[in-house]
Image (cartoon, rainbow, N blue to C red; front, top):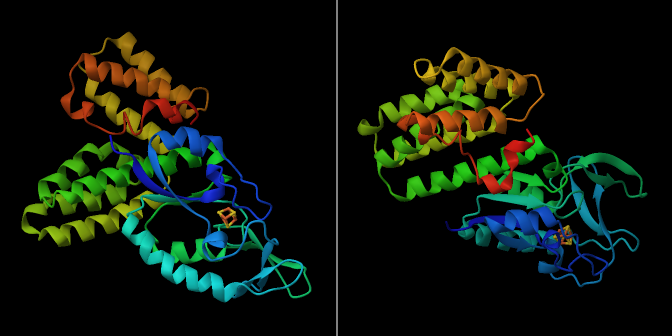
Amino acid sequence: MDKIKVGVSSCLLGNKVRFNSQHKLDHYIADVLGQWFDFVPVCPEVECGLPVPRETMRLVGNREQQKLMTSLTGIDHTEKMEKWIQKKLPELEQENLMAFIFKTKSPSSGMRKVKIYNEKGNPVSYDGEGLFAKAFMQRFPDIPVEDEGRLKDNGIREQFIESIFILDRWRQAVSERKSSSIVEFHTRHKYTFMAHSPEFLKAMGKLTAAAGNLDINTLIQEYRKQLNNLLREKKTKKTNYNVLLHILGYFKKNLTPEEKQELLRECELYYNGYSPLIVPLTLLRHYTGKYKESYLIKQYFLNPHPAELGLLNHI
Ligand code: SF4
């Protein structure tokens, strides 16, 4: 499998580009995710021409408008940074990134909760965005973004990585320029999408049902809009549980009452927070193989991302 292209703040990969000539290596990102993702490192401060080491920087202004200034000497680097951003964003567009992982709290790379100071040096907001991160998110609103801090949360991590794999499969389906590939994509994600949003699943189902009558570009454009909306809807224990019960329905005739009882109990233990999703999912995978449920075998809900990532063991 080709690695998936993902942008990342350079210091998180261990590159010594920080103000103090150090890095902020994140082993999970670099070593674990690095096995599946082809990272495109970006350091806005170094790439816009600032040296290593350099004075620390901060955002100065108010919630609406900020400048990027050195913390002690008050040198304004906003123009330099903005010029570089204007040049960099079209380059990143060519990279076809499936996601971006930002460094927390940086006045250049932070995607949220960046401190904003007034001219006197007092914080006036704790909810700013770094200049590059803000411009990136405005230019590419449909590319999933997270920061390494939020990725420590198991639920956030799983949904973010799941969306990267979904979007990569979408990219492959679109590259074939055939409505049958879009229909296949939709079919294999039915239960994944149901866990996110039955409403958007339905809307996407209507589009694929009409696929034969739609021009391929219209189909791709309209389907992608709905897919973006759907991915913004987060899965919960309740929505996953609902999908588990739907899948369980396939085995009504095959399972003994004891087996059904065991499966139902595992689904309920998951729903009530006593066991992770991997437990009922493993049982369902087992029965799917045993009873050769060909429709289910292809469902990405049962195998959303590489098992080695172990993401289902913690949600
Ligand atoms: S946070 Fe961003 S600007 Fe700062 S060192 Fe890391 S990549 Fe460079």
